[in-house]
Image: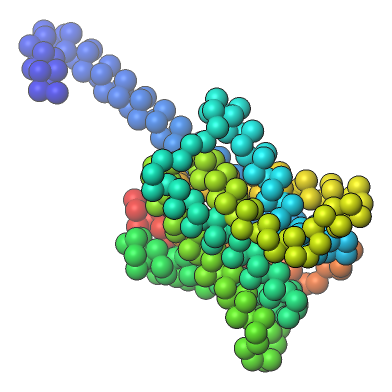
Length: 337
């Protein structure tokens, strides 16, 4: 750098006055292009993240219809079995090879499969058999807050005042949406066994998100999601066999298979990949806060696909969720900048 400045200073004044502004202009152009590229990349990541949340929100409607024909555990097994195959093909197309595990990665993938696929599925479906879906959705909405808190404690991520306010506002918005404007009514029944099962969902997904952040230091998001689905699928198999998997496969309707393919390819293969891609770029807590939009999308799809009716609380709560997500990410961007 010093040589370049000396060379410019040794030029005649009439040439130096031309060369120096040109160099500065070139650096400014490079800086502008770099910033523009970063903005485009950041926008793409946010679009992928919110699209993943929309795909997951639609799973509530798809799962509700599918539950009329298949046992929830069998639905989960078929979903992740097909998703595993789809993601293996994605790895082949994108990377030109199938993903490989090395040494300790085997145990890491086993852990991700056990938490994010196996445990989450069992806790979720068991909990829904004991409590209403709106109550379960409110409990699951605690997940982003848990991710942010655990990230701050163990990963030294800064939350900030805006981040805390955004998380609380987003959480409150979800409560308004799923309770039809009366969030306190959801908790008047006290703690039930189903509540504890859904809390297990919160713990398992928080663990899955944070462990995935560490795993992706040595592995791509696509490979991490692929292997976690493969391990989780094998863990679900014994439970599925117990609930007459073979018989339900034979009796499944054509429309049931369409729903299973949606859950496997779009909600799992694509959705999980986009979510982990966002975690790698934005971090687990900034990505996790978007999970609060999943119940919002679930209500929207319920209205559009299942004719469940539109309540004014959807508009009010939805606005709170969106503003909460904005505040949370704005607060983190300000602290990091």
